[in-house]
Image 1 (tube, one colour):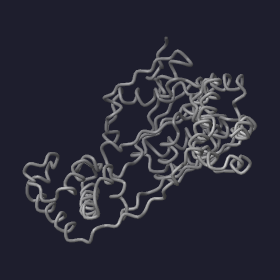
Image 2 (tube, rainbow, N blue to C red):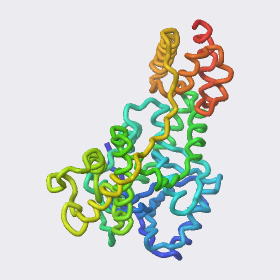
Image 3 (tube, helix red, strand yellow):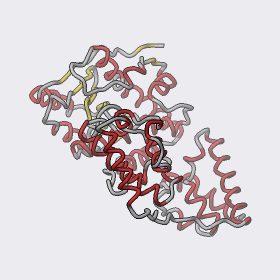
Image 4 (cartoon, rainbow, N blue to C red):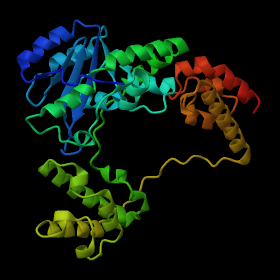
Length: 377
C-alpha cells in the first residue's frame, strides 16, 4: 500500500500568481478539485481553501488572501475541462453560495463508488479499495478551523492529499464502469448533481428546522421561535456557528418548560449568567406572551390498505433482488416514492418513467423488468 505525496503542492496567496496558474490549469483536460470550509467554527460559513490538482502539480489557493477568484469560475464553467471531485454536493453548494460559480462536466468519484457497489464511499476508503492508496487523515485536522492563518505544513499536506490521486482514481473507476456498462449511469447522476444550488435558510421558518421541535405544542413553538432568533443574533455578532451559541437540545428543553429554574438548566453557557441571562429571560417572556404558533399542516400520505401494502412489499422485493444481482445498493435501482405510487396504481409505469425522481438510465435498465412485475400485481 502506498501513501500519497502530500508534500508536493504550491500555496497560492496573490491574485497575480493565481491568474498565472489558472492559465496553466485551463489548458489541461481535467482538474481535481476540493474545498475546505470553516462551518465547524465560524458563522456564516465560507470557503477557506481551494485545492486543485493537474498532472504533476497540486495547488492550494487561499481565498482569504486571493480576492479575485474569477479565474476559477471560468475554469469550472469550461465544458472542455473535466472536474473531478469526491462528494461534490457540498462543494457545488459552496461555490454557488460564495461566488455564484457553476460547474460543468463533473466526475464525482463518490457517485462512482456507489454505482460500482463499493462498501464504503468515503474518499479514504475508496482510494484504498480502488487504488490501494492510504492517505493520512487526522481527525484533529478534519475538525480544525481553516480560517486560522498562517497554515502549517501539516494542514497543507492534509488539504493537498484530498486531490493528489483524484485523476488516477477517476481513470480506474471509469474503466470499471465501462466494463460494467454503467458509464451512462455515471454521466446522468453527475449531471443531476450539478443542478443543486445553495438555498439560504428562511429566518422566519428556521425554528421549524430545529431537531426536536415536533415534540412541542403551539406555545412551545412560539417560545422556540424567540430563542432561535436570539441565537441567530448572537451567532452573527460573534461569528460562531449556532451549536456553539446554544444547542438545539437546550432550546427545545427551555421551550417545553420555560418556567424551569435556569440555574439548573444544563447547556446555557454564558446565557446562564448576566447580562445574557437577562436576555434569555426576555426571549422566554416574549415567547410565552406570543400567541401559540399554528404549525402548517404537513402533507399526509393516504394510509395504505392491505392490498396496497402487499403490492409495495412485492416491489421492494423486486428492487432488492435487482440490487443483490448487480451488487449495488437497492436504492439505486428505482426511487421509493415512485414505487409507493405504483403500489397504489400499478398500471402507471409509463407515467412513472417521466417522474422527476426517476433517471433515464433506470428506465433503460429496469423499466421493462418493473413493467413485468407490476403486470403481475
